[in-house]
Amino acid sequence: MKLLKSISLYFIYPITMFLLGFFSHMAYVEFFYPGRYPDQVQENVSESSGEEEAVIQVAETGGEITTCDTDYVVVEYNLGDDTSKSSSGRLPEKYLGMTRENLEEALKDYEMNPTLEDQEKGFLSLELERFSAKQVVVQKNFQPIEKSSGYYLMVEDGKIIVMEEDQRTVYLTTEIYADDLSDRLKQELIIGKYIHSIDELYGFLESYTS
Image (cartoon, rainbow, N blue to C red):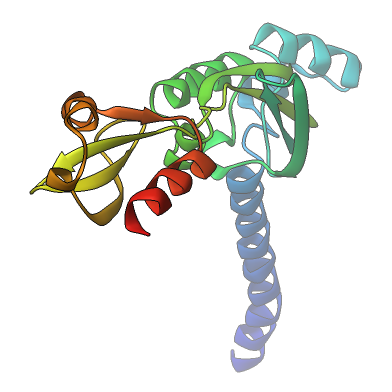
């Protein structure tokens, strides 16, 4: 009896371990390579038709999908100077297991809520240029916001302050009192005296602090 039990355990244990390993592998493949073994494809592929029928079935079910092996290329196009640069890397996890249609919808969502980094670079739009299980290429279009070098001189608490061109950001606070200036210049400062460059700015300030 003990011998029979030992023999049974000898066969049952390796079979159990094999099955556990097999199902663990299938779970791994399904997670990292979604859709590699779609049910609808395997149910329709017979031994006689082989790969040809599988290809037809995949086309009918919406085409290829992205996996962990999909190369992700981002082209950044600058509309201001008509230049572009590209970078390649791993496909973001949120885009795994997507068909072309799924990815296009996801990119539309990104257009509505781009990252702060892209916003600061002047993000305008995002386009899907190429799609396959092997490679995805997207193009980000940017229109950089040009910063002006101009400034405004204004009066605050009796002193001249220098504002950036938006007239909201303080660039510099001086110790020059408005009462020490000519009436004409004081009138200009009330509405804001525009200074075209940093050199003109420091030339003006030096003339009233020397």
